[in-house]
Length: 617
Image 1 (tube, rainbow, N blue to C red):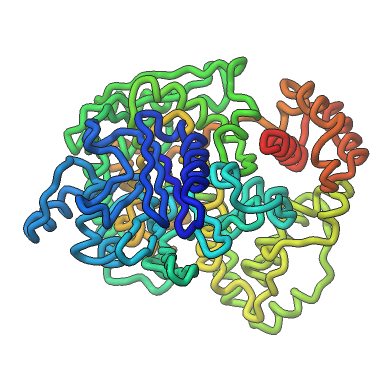
Image 2: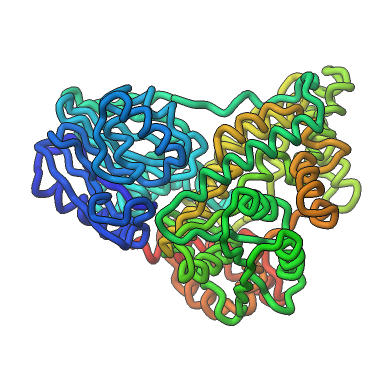
């Protein structure tokens, strides 16, 4: 893993060097092993290195061809680089390092940018500079595991691994109220926006080409997720699908064991990390599996993880977290480039800090729930989709016309919500979300009267007949790339730890995404395919475990443990100075919550945003 930065198409080389150096300095925690900066008349590339392959100085970046006509800065890991290297050597290429980075240089010259990228299997964000053509390519991996942001101004383009690094170097503008509103709704900012005007995120599976001669850019998608749909079951039976997923998972794990540094695994009490550890054992890996425990906590998973470790016969080490020394809200601001209120990120920060003292690469089980359908809403949306398919469209449209707003609570509310989803599909799901309406009078001035596109979707004439497919596509662009992936990248890279998830292998993902919904939710069981593998390879007890997650009770702690911090921040908050909140209404709501020692996520989001605004000033 690394941090990358650069500026192409500028008019002042001295200033460009300084600004890129500002960015690389800000990215130092992503790459503590080395720093590099290289210049051309119209390009400056910068890099911070976390050494994974070829720990010698030969692996430093920016990495250049011998004639300096092609150069690259790269963040990530190309798992099939040795196969690609063998192909390139047969074409006459001579390699001087043992890195995956050098494959990018030779591959570009032999195949061109899109044929090169289409061959890559891994997670990556890169900038490839062609000095002869005066063109730079910004590329992000298919699923968006690694971040890459950019800003265009005055016929030039600047880029970095994080929004904060780019903005600290003077790129982008003021805080965008629309992005503030999106953060308050979700607790994160999606890939469609940035907290600052003028800064954009390279989409997952996209390539940005910038031409110095014209001062313009173009965007293309070299990969899009397979169409996710509930079509009639193919010839493949359930057991055949299980066998194929198992084979692909083993292959993905084997590829991710390659490194010139110590590799470890994260083992929770759940199915996904248990399967990754099983596959490591099958692949002949002799790694330590680390389990995070919270002694005495009801959600502690260390006991279940210990059973898995004993069953697999692998080495396990427990890392106990003392709640008294758990990460603080300020750590979210330090670790993430934009406001980020995912409370489980505090747990991931604690995990990363402890593991980083023992290993440099960490295999995780992230991603299994998203493509194999492990969340409760997946089952509910499939039920709603089936119900919608049995109801005549005029009746669905008739329900859409019924006034909203009742009942407020209880079983009738749940029934009303289900009926709304049946009739309104994805548009109803987006508005059911506990977000902006629950701020009441706390939002002020610059935010009042604004809305976000997610709450403006029209209800479909045919109701929710394609709801699950629509939701998975929507969720990929929302939580998956906006919350889940940034959480792991930000928390691990804050401690210079490279996280690798076999379930984010694009070949495994592509296969799983096209399996029929009924197969992935067989017998109404979330992640039925993965549960079948777990029952076969680990044991029935593990396969039957419910989904659990390591959580930090942030919404409760702001009224107890963090109450002094909240009250101090909101004596004279920047949120009020910026015209975003009604301070009196916020204080009134916090007093009520403090009396009950139980808050809600709206106050937590305001707390995180206020911390971020102060740090960013």
